Length: 265
Image (cartoon, rainbow, N blue to C red):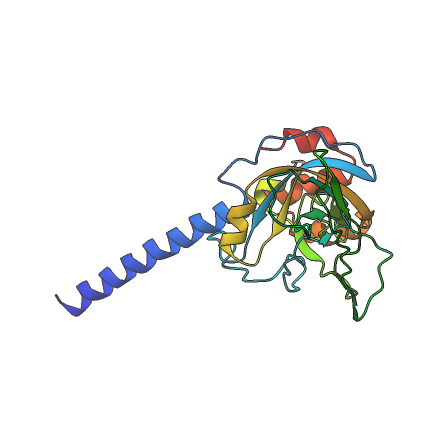
């Protein structure tokens, strides 16, 4: 090929590349695809029942942002679910066929503990285990009952729980809103938003890896709002990004223009 032909081919390839970039930019900017179906906002209350999903920074639609939230800060996974061994009193019947005279009864069951904001903040305390045993003498055909009372070892963490990052529609849960999952005791703070969340009553919980994300899936969860974020702060941040339709919908709702937000597709 001549130099002129090579130059024409290079220009054609460049033009095609620019066209692809322009189309992609329109897609990202929210001009080529429709927004998700609009849902009327749920009532603002201390306790809510919401649909929760999960995401992580290695997903295809999040890799361009890395492990960063919409505010530019770092995404954080929440502390593990909070559990504690419970003091349990049990009884066991001893029949005539039992060969042993002494039976020790213990429980390994762990029951979910409701998270308490009143827990101390530092250090670790361990309460020792005390087990009471009873010797049974089988002198009659009656079925004696042995009970065990005492305290199981409990390790109580006094470190503050790590608050995880969450994404949501900022017109329903303004940036900075902090809540607790009642089923696990984990705490999350709204620091992110997303296309699929605009105009929806769904909260997306950040997970550290795809395994945890897939394990969570989608769940209806009761939550307790510990702190409501500032809608004015949310509006101020979002107003400079209204070139994206999902952000425009949040802005309209924050401004009280719900019908326009619902009509935006």
